[in-house]
Image (cartoon, rainbow, N blue to C red; front, side, top):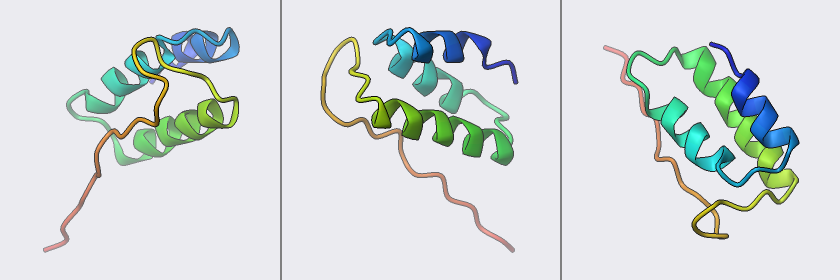
Length: 69
């Protein structure tokens, strides 16, 4: 997964970072390891207090669950 665009948005403090992050998270066939990487980006953006383009509140991207059978 190429995160250069996401990194650029994050470094420049661009509010559309949150929209792009959400789109990447919701893509089909996302590997579990990639979700951890995206989660790390979310935490770094929150630490920088990067606001979103729409709302300045906390974002929720849903919960990923796995069942082992």
